[in-house]
Image (cartoon, rainbow, N blue to C red; front, side, top):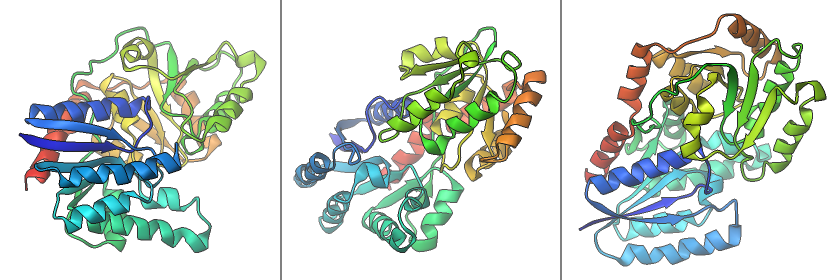
Length: 346
């Protein structure tokens, strides 16, 4: 029997990532793999998950396994992932890394004189892996700039193909995803509250704080002035089975990100038939150019966001059937998993 160890360095209950991880898990099984899943999240417990990497070394001595580090990030995988990948290389075991974020996303949090450490770490991840997969052209170009190897591939961030448009009267706007400074919820709240109460549709903030971002979420909640408390709703974590209900009355999803490599939440939003307003970062611009289905504003500019909000309040966006079909055809989990399986088998 074909065997696959799927190591997921991502927190549990991460909403937009749950569908992604479960989708790939089910597709691997469809292709005849006996899948073993192991969770790693270095940021959550550095000692426990560093030691767990050493425990996972035992899989390298079991016959028939392929190893996939799925949705790798520096803070998720941690430094001991290097030991696992190096040992896999020495023992000639096939280890594949699917990377979620650019190195620059995390390096910017280090002092300038220490940022080389992040790039050295990722260089080792790339070199020790048999295949290194990214989701965007921007990420691909970054990796090739410091690790010019041949085994770097692009497979888009997929979404489940079985999602159907959420039907309902579109009376609200929304934000969907884990709440973190880089995602700019505070910018959205500032722009929204610059209008008189009731001038814009009510807004629903759907998500919980990302690990380490609890204070930021509380700051955002405290930003809501008394006269807007009935207009701005924070839901906290939302389960997959609740999305269709919560998304049914959303006419626009807003992604006011400061910086990001890619967004699974964006494509998932579109699959529900909801257009988007997003900052003009590279990924969103790339997505908008290829699929349409929304519009952009200038990243980190409250004034640009404010202008877009009032324009879309008066002239709402919609997603055409042609746009939705194109997104579904190119980004379905079935098609993306098929490409990854081809890499596994190569």
